Length: 162
Image 1: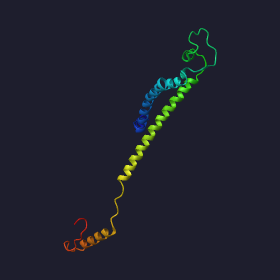
Image 2: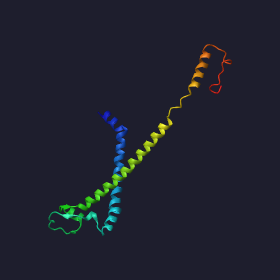
Image 3: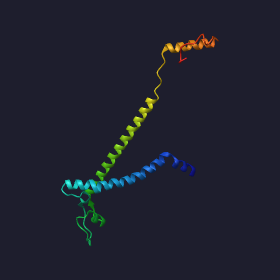
Image 4: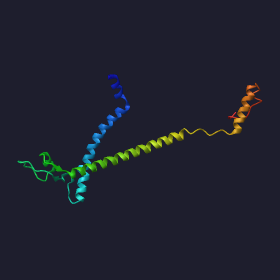
């Protein structure tokens, strides 16, 4: 079973998947930062200084002894107050759309490159043009004369640059 597991891990697809997961996790952090720190503040500014990540509706009571801000989504959530965090959800939707669009561009570019490589490969492996029938016939005549033992000098035909 250990050998089978080792063979499974050593396959290229599993290693490619592992690399993709690691790169995807790092890429996810970049997109989260892009969304939280660049895009959403711009959208918020355009919408009138709104901070989407802090938009919520409180669904339950605030616990006794709570001393934090009543308008802080993070503080209320940490205190265990049930919240409907539509701002955080909106931020995640924008995150998803950015990641999906970037992956679309990446797949589109790779598909174009693969098609171009296949086109070049197909163009490079085109069969040579067929020889004219008269050249083929003259070659056959020459070969037949040679096989009969005729004098090569007497049967020299202007073929193949001879």
